[in-house]
Image (tube, rainbow, N blue to C red):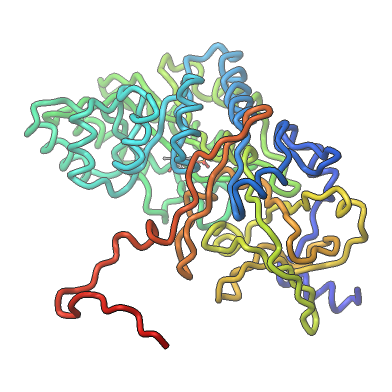
Length: 456
Ligand SMILES: *Cc1c(COP(=O)(O)O)cnc(C)c1O
């Protein structure tokens, strides 16, 4: 590669990243066997042949293991803290049910997510309802169901909730979501705790609004909530945000109110490439250090950390095309399936599943999908072996913000989802059929009924 090439690639943010072996070493649910890459004890070739591609594959073992790692780290601190899994990271019924069986509560941001949590067997009292724009219908449904906590994000929402609760003759347990104005040091599109962001109420208004809430009919303020962003890879922003929370608790109590619950949000990052996010133990000690002495029930809302590394997107090479300057590996998965690379410039490990490809020489390739947008690119100048049509590769760490962000752009039906447990695999969401994808389409009456398609 000439120096000019290097400069050009750096400009585009190209990063070759860790090699295959080192990606594998850090992901204990993945192994390279004689028949190729396997998730737990199921070879991926079996899934690709049996269920087709593209297909999302989740390791049940990895999800449970990560949940337990987090739970163990928290309980070792002796704090009263509960894990509320953030459904928006991955809302597959099987994933939520698996976590519910481990004892997880839920953090939901829509009526749809709230209903999925309930279907999965999570008790209404173990659900937190977050979000800046909950509608009246959503709040009414949550109250009717006895939802454990509603995280209110503005004075306007508080007034609306009070009116709804009063009309229903119920009391809403409310936490005020505070915006601590700290920089989570993450991608701008997933930073939520800066004053300029749409989330929460300014810390300076919290005491007054809490007092106001305590006087409102139908509202029982129980505490505060924060969530400062996602894919956070250092402890400093957490320390800062929880410090703000601790001060507010003292101030609210000094004003004569009770505070019994703090929702500490989610956001803990994972290692996609070479990030070194804090361990659950280190995160738990920050909780203890900052909030341990307050005599409150704590909750955290991890999403990505629990499910992200446990999933991959299995996809087949449609063709390998030698462009004028670059080699393109064109996959049957696209930005409509996995949006993160186009949306955030996110880096995902890409592993061939055939053993022979692990021994072959590497050269840079752009890995792209078939959608008609240049942004439909998963990787640029990635060192990869020759990957002729028919080869299958895995896009790693796509268990969070993967399938949930999929669309049917380019009239591409949603991919199948499979869960692996030990030696068995099961479809947890069918591949969408053409008919299901179009089932909601109707013609306006003035166009009349569909005519039979012309013969030529
Ligand atoms: C998105 C979100 C989470 C989960 O964030 P992760 O980065 O996936 O851990 C938790 N709480 C709230 C309020 C959220 O909006």
